[in-house]
Image (cartoon, rainbow, N blue to C red):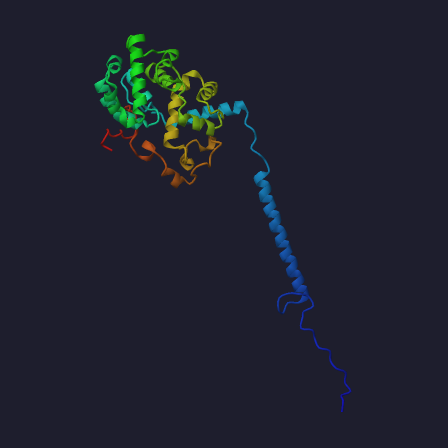
Length: 313
């Protein structure tokens, strides 16, 4: 006999609201709201971080502020390198002039290792002017470009003999007329052999003053003019030595040792190199890293080791 009771409707196997197994509709709704809230918070945080990155460009530095910062850098470098000096061995203006000409496209160390034999063979401009080119070439071969350098040395020696009585002139306008002598070489000789202030713009000097935002000029003559306007004349020669010392020891071209740099707080390019202090210390060169310097006969106050003679490395 058919039952008189009404059939009981089957319960749906699906929950009222989509959610996790056993989760009520209210719980699922609450969970979705929490998830959405977290996503919104994450988006806001990401937007805030992005905004913080691009929010403000660094405030443009006034010329006066740059000059003050540049002079402070010079003072700091003077404390770090009180022994800064020209890294070419010489005993007189003629030796310094010749050594500086030889230093093009090579290291001061290689020049210093080569000049003892050169000056033993040709101690005066008169001796050098009378040299057999092939014999001089063999002596200076380790410095590279020895044929072109031999030609320059023979030419400048003959000019010193014929036009200046065998003496190196003490004026820039005379020096730059000598074969192979430009403003950089002339300023090296004037500043270190005659005590005439000069700014030596070599590759290290140019690189660092651009990193420090003293100038964006690339031409050495223009760089010299800009830097000369920042510092008093009395500072020019020693400033050149300090900047070159820093470029060779810490602020290297490819990987500056930013984390070991004593003037890092003053450098607008901090972070271009290694910032970890321990890793940066391993990048230090010459006396800063405990290695020999460039000169075989360094000044008495030089704290590092003298360089080895040719063949003794």
